[in-house]
Image (cartoon, rainbow, N blue to C red):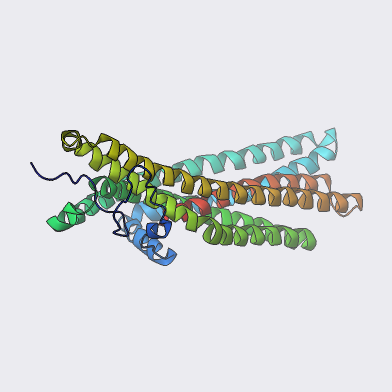
Length: 343
């Protein structure tokens, strides 16, 4: 019977001195080769262009939907101005109401149609990516397979497929539209109320820059280590379970349990650090949204009290904030998803 070797050495090639207390605390060894944003987007973009009709149709429909979304605060403000004029404007009010409802309905329908072109492309690309990844792994040498966790390899292939899905959706369906809407609304306000628009644009820029900086410098380093441990857990579990007959033959169950326990303990510690940092960033950006709400509505209320803005303008500001806050939350969430996916 061959000697019992159910698991390879730890990543730094040091032997386990005490398998019952080993926790693999050399977290610096967990850093994997990382790619730049340009490399990742270039790789994903090549898959997008494999199906140009589906891709560009999705993009165009998404831009049309954004146009309807930008019109929503204007339609709400116009409706309020007519209502404030009195009951004698009932006919105009109903027309304005129909436009208000129609704008939102058009946004909903067009956005839904865009997804119906996007989803088939995404599913086909994810299939191609998994098939090609498997073919590449198949081509590796027998020595590579003998010295690599099978479970870890499977986990990476699967995570790559879903990483493509998250990054693609974030860039095309959420990040791009969010930037267009946020900048577009700010420009609309600058044209009518320069101070209000400048305030709005400043908050948007601060929100975006701080999100990128905090997730890259503060969150991502911790996330890289926890994701590496995720792969190690999958590989360790798969190989240990697969070699269970050999483990039992040598009475090594306790040793294997201790080894897996060490990996999961380190995963728990690093993952908790990552999650805590995400919560901290989330709190900061929600406080910024409170500031945006207070600034937009307060500035418009002040202009209204001075006779420089109508009731419809105040409604415009409230509707614009609701729209902007939703996009800013999506923007922040998708930046965080992008930082988690690009590993």
